[in-house]
Amino acid sequence: MNNPKILTIQDISCYGQCSITVALPILSAFGYETAILPSAILSTHTAGFKDFTVHDLSDEIPKIVNHWEKEKIRFDVLYSAYLGEVRHIDLVLEIKKTLLNGLFLVDPVMGDNGKLYPAFDQSYVEAMKRLVSQADIIIPNLTEACFLADVPYQEEYDEAYILVLLKRLKELGAKQVIITGVHYHKDTLGIASLLEDGYHYYEHKRISKSYHGTGDIYTSAFLGEYLKHQDIQKAIELAASFVVASIENTLGDETHNYGVKFEPLLSQYAGGK
Ligand code: PXL
Image (cartoon, rainbow, N blue to C red; front, side):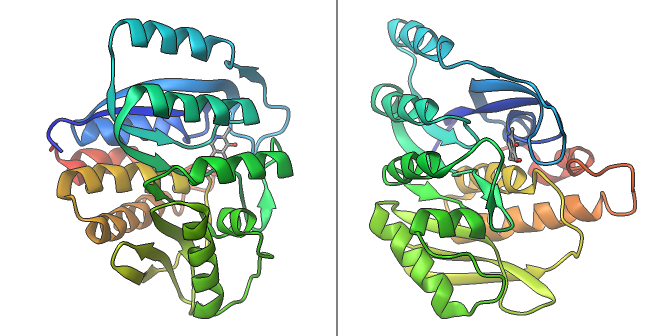
């Protein structure tokens, strides 16, 4: 795709290195024009801070979309991630119909480590199933895959368990499914996918410390790489290397426990289109 115009819909967490503050710099480093539609403004992300503030933007979104429609603005890529409320999911589905002519990428951000994030409940999971059913590519982590597939989350599992998840997510309607944070061995981590040409597993180094926001970095880097190379398997691998490098760049700084320091790596990593 030449000069794709991207729209990303997700929250603005003002502090904490996630969502739009991650997606924009990464996609910009690839050289892509990226418009934003914030679902809500939060003081921080919800996973590691107490008493965060939330200002919902659901009422503003239809006004913005109406204006864009009048201006005949259209997008080649729609990338949705952390939204916040069921209403946002319906708005994204509407925007897909009216403003998108191209790729729909959904990162169904809802939880981690077997649990939903504080803002979410089962009604959000059910709505998210409707969103992923419309997607060309979805990138859940293992927790999100389990909630979407109605499969109990397990710490220990084998390839057969992951294959069930992948197949169920494809049955929901997603065309290609990529699950992050899958491990078959204790010292490695990897990405399992069910793509147009079947099942793949890409294994990489496991770093024992985990940080917030790495899923957002992964999906944003994946999108950048996918648009650049038009090769989904290559994008899966290159995005994983970027996340590993970003985590390694953060290890050792004990004061930094809310996100990862990916920014210093950006100029070398993406290197324009
Ligand atoms: O990194 C995903 C994310 C995005 N936005 C908000 C979050 C989280 C994860 O916790 O809380 C508000």
